[in-house]
Amino acid sequence: MDFILIRTNEISLKNKNKGIFMNKLKENIEKMLEGKTKIKRINNRFYITPKKNLKSYDKDKIKDNLNKVFGIHSISFVHLVDKNMEDIKNKSYELVNDYIESHSIKTFKVEVKRADKSFEYTSIEFAALIGEKVLEKFKELKVDVKNPDMILYIDIRQEGVYLYSEKIKCAGGLPTGTSSKGTLLLSGGIDSPVAGTLMQKRGMVINAVSFHSPPFTGSKTVEKIIELAKKLSYYNSNPIDLYMVPLTKVQKAYKEIAGKNIVVLQRRSMMRIATKISDLTQTKLLITGESLGQVASQTVENLGSISDATEKIILRPLIGFDKEETIKLSKSYGFYDTSIKPQTDSCTIFLPSNPATKSKIPVLEKIENEIDNLFSLELEALNETKRYRIFKEEVQELNDFENILGGTL
Ligand code: ATP
Ligand code: MG
Image (cartoon, rainbow, N blue to C red; front, side, top):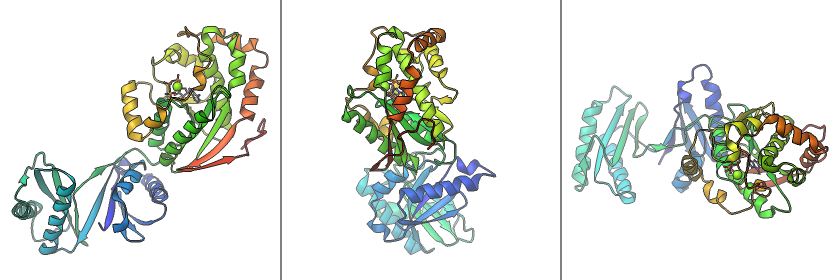
């Protein structure tokens, strides 16, 4: 392989702001490939060449990494040859041969694009010509122009001929860092990491707040959240700051008095604390993994009661998703194995047997007002919050979140 071709899709539809999106994408690709490459932009595409020998690169790893960079529509590993029949033919044989070795195929077609109009054949003529040569050499193959198992792409350009055998579809979306910042409420479940990634896919950089209940939840719960945050950070193009908030005292304060409303009341506390963290860290909004009707706390009424606890916009990207759809995404983004690890969730500790499905805000406010020190307990939780800076596999615990009451970060 001589270079990696990166195609964009949605960005190419932008007019005036295209440069901003392409620059951000370039920066994110560079970060993902850790500076080992040179990247050139031509129009809506990037051409990546390695600083060292690309042959020593692990293609699967590159594929896997670039699949985590939002804004990329597809990639191809491209071979460049001189514009002469012999070289094109030999490289075609080589690519078909390599493909046969790793895939079981019966049919193929050749697709030629001719940007260089001075080339002696038309696209169709040249596709037929190379097709014939391939048929002669690989007698077991047949041509199928409608639904081939393999496509050999040949682009005839001014500077030479590009050949490749795959357009590898990537994650799409917009480059992270081209939209506002958001604060994800990250639980150890399946939904919230997916919700965060969907917003990253629309260009957001996120940080994360997670509530736990020591000593009822242990260090394994914290480790699980950190593992999820590591995975999220690959998509973030930036470190993820994770705020671990101990909610136990707040939860205990609700225990005797909240009855069937306890889940929604806890969520309101979470919203108030997450709002403070969002303000302190200058993010614009909150993100949750809620999905309409999935559990008792996610009825329209209860979502309304939860939203009422904050002035911030709450984005709920999974609101219309079935669990099955979310699980599929969780697997494809790589969270699933971590999400299903059986650690205790902070919310399941004080669960009522018959949670309210239609909470009423005045009733909730009345309970909140009956607990005199509720808001100071929430501030205390904020004050006891631990902050981690996580990027890829690196985790750093920061100590600058102490004594933040009234402070800024
Ligand atoms: P998830 O799979 O994300 O845990 P869920 O289907 O289990 O979601 P809930 O437990 O009701 O649903 O949580 C709804 C949303 O509230 C979560 O997606 C998350 O955004 C937020 N949330 C719940 N518990 C916590 C927590 N302990 N820390 C941070 N956010 C939480
Ligand atoms: Mg949950």
